Length: 277
Image (tube, rainbow, N blue to C red; front, side, top):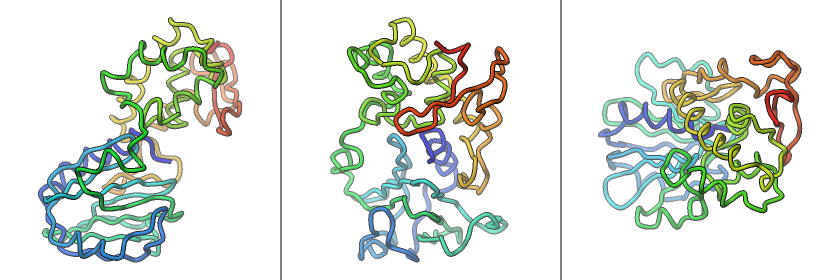
């Protein structure tokens, strides 16, 4: 599933290519996404200008002129590509091009989602923060609100695994399985440790590792294993820099100990048994 770095990378690219463009028309190929596309969606979008692109957690927010925004979630396998003359669409099955936004420069924004777990919905700007998707989210991990003091307060007395705590979107928004594993490796903390038993010093290391890992991933346009593509149709490059995720049985880059995999919160969790305690 695309996490914060993938969505932020997508946003930054689309800021340069899509902001200022007007949506001329909308073609809907499949309404049955995670949340069904409303019957009046196309009519409500046509003729609107894209004035700003923002992000909240793993959601892309396409701000339009007027009172509405489009809330976009890529689900497990979704992509939002900006296609123009010369764009190579070989990696995208046209049967899964569920939404197509034709822009005033003859380019197209295309939402493709083979598994249809994603979502594109129109929301009034004034009601955005209170939507079901956003209202319970914790602070952004790259914001001033997320720091060691905040993390320590949330971890205090908790029996839940520290990795599960970090992936709880009510605690901190946008961190998923890949980056939680990488953050904990950098901090030297095993993913299955009870959050309440992680020391203050260790929590400070975790809090310090969060922006380092996330910013590095954003700089590499995120991580692609199978389906994720950015708006240009390109895969993320951060997979080559992963230290533990997906490396079970392979030697740790730091100490050569084989990487292990333990299930935490029903998710595969990779760690080095020597470097992480």
